[in-house]
Image 1: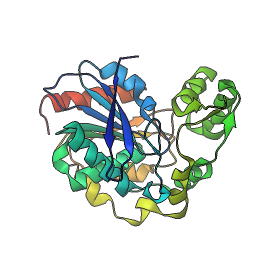
Image 2: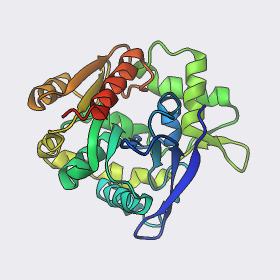
Image 3: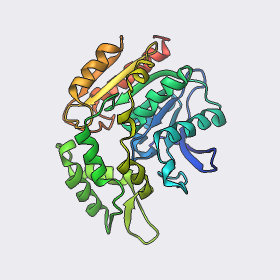
Image 4: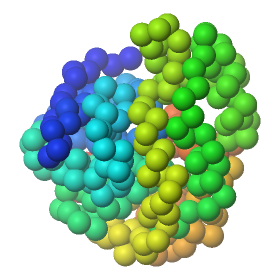
Length: 289
């Protein structure tokens, strides 16, 4: 794995938030990796290892995840608060423009950045997320978020993930499930293995419709004028095929890529996903729009 330094910034309500910072040249915009609802910077280890050196890569951990502080008020676990936190990151870390790679919730935040501060985006990749989502997929996620399960061994943890997410990754071997477990879980002080996020993030997610009440197509449209890549897992139960098709039609020049054999969400290490990232970054480097 590539070397990184630990970076920190402070939210307006005083939380110490964490990101991994992989070094790269200063003459091109850094790649800002934004993870899904329950995930952390480790999800992007392989992406960062491949890109670091050629690009600076910043892998964010939202409040309540990974090494970022947990919020005192669970109501602050919401997209508008995450957007405010990211605004503080831009200011405190001296970021001007970035190439955002957003998985699921991270892609939603990417669209929100485009809608509120489009000058900050040099390019964007939305990973298995769009302006409309499948309610059934969201209900499936609600079904496991916030369950404070813990496990005695990594093998037990891997088997639990295989049981809950097997349909999304039908070709995974035991080694793949172990790797996923180590990305999304940690060993606690009691020696048990548990998920690496504040279980209270489930509280606002369980009771609110979230972004589903808002029309996000204008936010999606705000991505226009820069290189954009759209990814969908072929087995995804979150991003409907019709929505994905409309996204490609409405955003001229977008690179739409279907990642075969996986559901929500592609790991970004799949050959077609890695190639799509490379094409996006080549367009950014060339100053393409």
